[in-house]
Image (cartoon, rainbow, N blue to C red):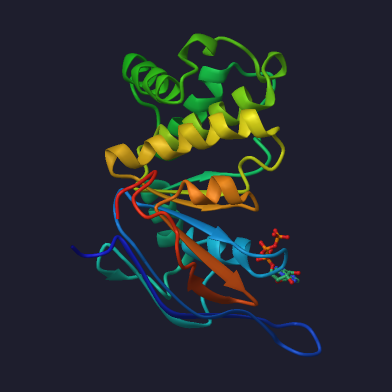
Length: 237
Ligand SMILES: Nc1ncnc2c1ncn2[C@@H]1O[C@H](COP(=O)(O)OP(=O)(O)OP(=O)(O)O)[C@@H](O)[C@H]1O
């Protein structure tokens, strides 16, 4: 099966300093539909930079990036922005919810930005399906200020899912949550692989990483697969 994403020899060099610094050093990674991958590594090892390249916020200096068979290594920003909104969902440590809007309105914002105005009934159905997918449809009318951190993060996940991305990129999504709440958030994230969405999770939490189908270790920009990862849990390979 063709990989959804193929990174080959991706190198990212940070310039503008006295000495250019290599942040990603020949990264190879294949990502298939419906699989889950954890990216672990110490602080400063390049995890967020790798997610930025994967999510087309940043371009590699060397190497190739293939998405669904198309080489997109050197894409102009306008086309990158289109692909970002059609293919990717993003979840961050901070929830970035608008506090004067309800949960449903926060999720609906992603539809307005990405696809223009859908008819109201369709918009509502998509929003409620996304909230339901992360188990918080009953909170649709609540504002973030009346929700727990875990609930707010699930609203943010619903917002990322509402456009049905093919790849969900999550950067430390449980970093601001206690262990129990973090586990619920990982449950919600892992569930997206059931419908073929690929999940790439950057985390410092070993237990959360171990729930992914594969664990990749980033050390000074070099990515290697961690031996002994419990393949098959939390996502197809
Ligand atoms: N725009 C930038 N300007 C200067 N240095 C940067 C920039 N972006 C990244 N870096 C440096 O590149 C290295 C990798 O950063 P990155 O944020 O990718 O690491 P990380 O593994 O995600 O770290 P953390 O776990 O702390 O979030 C770090 O040393 C960081 O300081």
